[in-house]
Image (cartoon, rainbow, N blue to C red):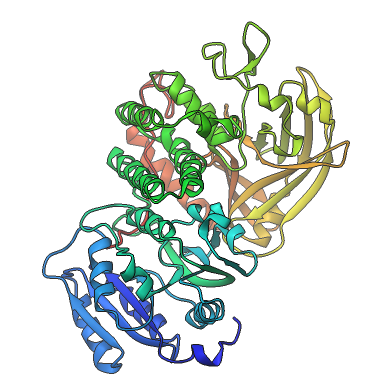
Length: 561
């Protein structure tokens, strides 16, 4: 973190902490705010009618530090907006930040934001937020491109990508600016209130400063008892709430005359929100899929020609065009792959009667002609991966895409295994790509399972980089092939570890990943899982994942107030 300017060290910042029934974490949140130092004038802790001891804990913190003020709501508001508004009304400092009870501010965050705000005379100052997966500690930056380097923007429209950062918590706001423009959160039970709040902020055209430093740690607890609003996506109501928030944000920006930002908000919905939910759609039951499809068609019906004109085969736009073209859910596995990051467009590669590339023979109106001129480095190329643990070999197959891959000339592929949760060296190997039957290219390599297990047990993700004759490259992930013996657990002998438990599997986006465990601790979960399945074998003729069965959604994270 950069040292603060002298004028920024005064008690200038209020941190509004909100929470509901989160006694296990709210203390850490408040202490992380107090630990920011003398720049923090006050910590306004708003307890949303907790019944778990949170209020008593906050009272103890207030007794220990006079900067802490506790406000209790008499009735639970049902969302994050009302407690944040309550805290904002109570703030006396010239600047304000927001902090959720299950997150923390990293050391130096307030000084860094305050230095940038005062140095640039900015009304809004943003920094990097990281999502920290717990208990693994893996960190994923949120919108890192926005915060790659310091910047001062006289107007948000100078960087339309700002509409992609819909978080309110990684920013410092001039209190007078929020009050002058009446910028508040939606009250009550309003999921995704951040989306609406940030739209109101950008609509007011503030002067903006951006810093590359980490200023907020968003904790993701996927095994917690209750679900966070942002992670509880299994119900159709969540999708309806999300689309409502996105549409409201678009209307706010449009009504304010911010046409460039409003167009960016629509593009963000296609590129982020739609892709995320389409990727998970195959996990849902038939009723959910139909309701999701019908509602999404209604939302997309409001889009106009200008919304589709820019890059009509971008993954989000292409998914939207397929949804609009079909009244019923269809091609869900293929849409899931297209929604992955990077996007993969799986075969078949159909053509309309006039020879134009199209989505499928059944939907020839969804034309893919722009793929014929898109650079190879941006093509949604599909690579299949077949991992056979007993043979300890990985086989890759690259599909052509309307002749574009052949035109670029695939020459080799860099195979990288990277551990999902631990920082450390990746395992890489570069292989030649050889032409094969049916307009494909293949490569094979041994998989050193013992080496992966020695470096770290847990989950290893497969990442690929394709190289072409002209020197261009394309990063891709691999589509996990299914079939007898492919995606199942194996207990393998190992000279180094005695026993290896190896489980290749497909992620939510269909990509190949690999779980590795060693010794007796690794084999025990396999035996337990098999024993649990004995009384509950599926009926003959129907396997899990086939039509007529429902794959349960994954466990997810804790609810935020």
